[in-house]
Length: 125
Image 1 (tube, helix red, strand yellow):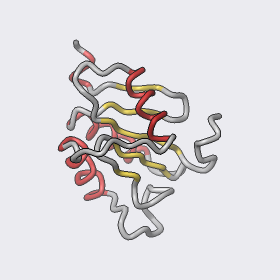
Image 2: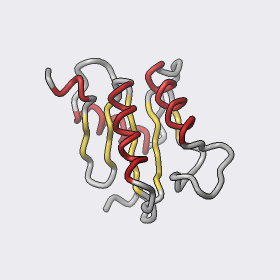
Image 3: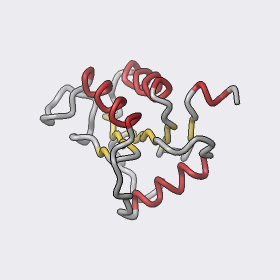
């Protein structure tokens, strides 16, 4: 297990990278984030849309018990959102994250094993 991951949460992040981005590009972006390197830029509209949609169903502010978030508020940057989920959260939360990532054209990074999942529209390319 990577030492930067929480032992008590299930960690996922969604990424708004350029068209044609590869899983390696996502992993490199995750690495830069973990090093504290964040680009100064306007928030990507895909990230903003995802954040608004996921927090409309599962609020992260103010932090409170009963939400799926192990860490709140969510780590939201211009090109990504990191979500530290309570390991006991309902499967529906994960399904909603996956659905919204696809809806907004975001790549999904699973920190547990380093897997990267492209949005469903990219699977056919």
